[in-house]
Image (cartoon, rainbow, N blue to C red; front, side, top):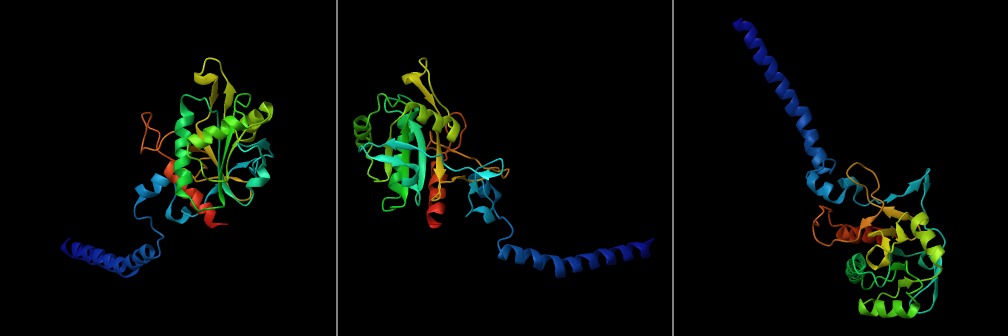
Length: 247
């Protein structure tokens, strides 16, 4: 029995020696080449592994990349603005209305913060489309923009045909918008932002399961709100920068 125990010790020692010679150097090399994620909590915060940090997903429906549908509206300066005016630019899109007493002020303060993050970037823009076009005339929207400190020349507050606006929101972007006399301000709408690349495709980062997040939560600039929803304004800024680098 003693001889068998000695053989076992020799066998274990031999296996450990082989592990040290062959396996450990490979692990060291993997860390050196950044193939191993050293801090998974950081990658979960932004929804990417280290190899995905410079990649944003395309939104696909039936295997086709989702592109912004054609639109044509009037901005706060009385100019006709279409989706083609945004080609070659990275932009954020929202649906809102100027008399909104609840979420719109939060959304637009966050968009101003985003605007201020890219003060000299001529290839960045924002599209704010009203869901109350009967009230939100170009004059009203111009005053609204001035009150919020809008200075980006590519930030257009858009108004126009009501049917076209609701079609664009609910079908084109799947961002909910509806009239509701029981809602504060008489309308309901999504508090999310869409991110569009220079070619007019809707883009987003991936979640922890590798699926596109699709939209960015526009109602919180704190780490986490009362509902537990994580802040996404900072990651939207990061993703805008990623797309701008592709220009």
